[in-house]
Each structure stands twice: as structure tokens, then as C-alpha cells.
Length: 45
Image (cartoon, rainbow, N blue to C red; front, side):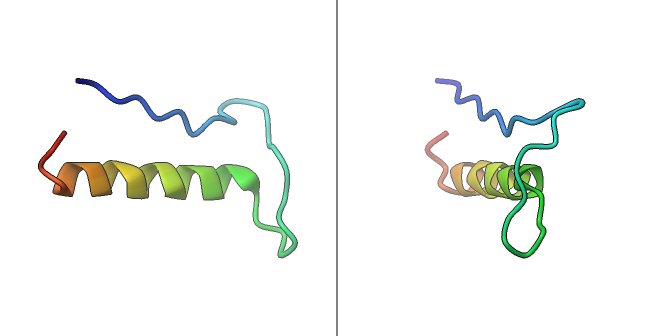
């Protein structure tokens, strides 16, 4: 089984900004990396 995680907002799209000014794309990328690490450490995938 393969799982594909698309963090989105690649290229020119900046996405939204959080209340602290953090770009949505940074949050999306961080969550995608955490999910990858979680799945890798689970020894299921």
C-alpha cells in the first residue's frame, strides 16, 4: 500500500496566513512531515 500526502501550495501559491503571520504552507508542510515520520515509525507502512 502506498500513501501520498500532498502538502499543497507549491510554486506561486502562498495560501493563507495564520493569526501570528505564519504561512499556511509552512504548517501544511510540517504536518505532512510529521505524518510521514509517524507512519514510518509505526512499522505498518
